[in-house]
Each structure stands twice: as structure tokens, then as C-alpha cells.
Image 1 (cartoon, rainbow, N blue to C red):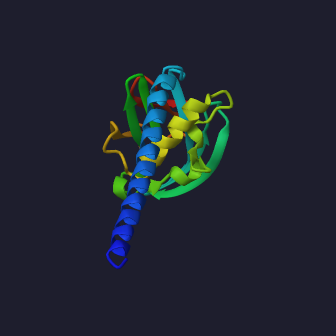
Image 2 (image 1 turned 120 degrees about the horizontal axis):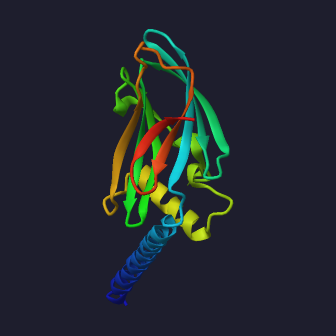
Image 3 (image 1 turned 180 degrees about the vertical axis):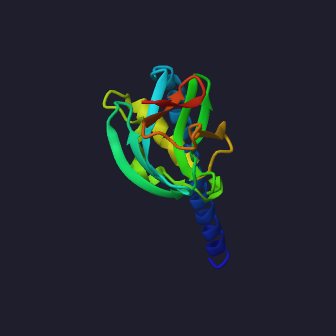
Length: 201
């Protein structure tokens, strides 16, 4: 019996480790399947997505007041936030994921010519609800799309992107010739087939 007890414990440990591995493998396969289905769903996205609209409300010699609206796929305002930033030129950084059928881009940071990108303000919390990025929410979207976006967003947020084609992309609002940013509303456009740009709204 003294010999059997260690053997039994070894068998139990192997069984537990094996069970954990199987569960982990199953979860990974489930996440991978959701990303595969997301690729199919991206083909049905609009050609352009507008996750952000913003206005520079005030511009001094070295300070900007920027009001940012985060938008969902149905053009509803998710959140509105005012940022007081040191600098004269406002920039937005996005995390972009490339798929066979198109691109998905999540607002990542806001920064300026006097605030380095690595020191910029993280934007995830402003448009995230229940771990889902509301900039890719639509009341008409399919479950496969929502599930895939949720998995993708979670991986990007946790920087678990080794198996994904993900890169950063920046857009910048240049001052006018007079050195001032006009009091216009701008929108950041994500082209589903690739590319980001700023336009007047």
C-alpha cells in the first residue's frame, strides 16, 4: 500500500494536468474559430467605419482642448470626453488588425507633438463596455461578428498578438497655414479595405 499511494498521486496529478491542457486547448480552438468566422463577417462591413469624431475647442500657444466623441457602427455616440493636452497638433494612434477580407481598427491612444505616442492617453476605457469595443457594435450585427470582435479586441488589449497580423497606425490633424486648427468637427475614417484618414465632418 505504501508503494501504491505515490503511484496513485502521480496518476491523479497527470490526470489533472491533462484535463487543464484539454480545457486550455479547447478554449484556444474556440477563440481561433471565432476569428476565422470574423474574417467572413468583415466582408459584410461597410466600406468605411467612423469610430471617432472630434473638435479642437481651444488652441493656445502650447495647449489644446480636444472634445472626442466615440461612435458605434450605427453612428450613435457611445461616449464623449474632453482632453486637455500640451501641444499644438493632435494625433490618434490605432491598433489595426489585417484579415483576408479587410481591416479592423481600434482607437488606441491620443497624443500631440509635445506628448510622445508612448506617453499618450489610452482610449480603450472610453468605448469599452462589458469587455466589448462599442465602436464595432451595431444592433444589426450577427453574433459571429460580435464574438470575433470580442476575441480580437481582448487579444489586442492584452498584447497577445503573436498569431495575428496587427500593427499600429497614426492619423494627425495638422494646423492650418496660420498655425491654428479651425473650429471644425473632424471624423476619423477607417477604410475596411485598408487605410485611415481624417476628414471634415
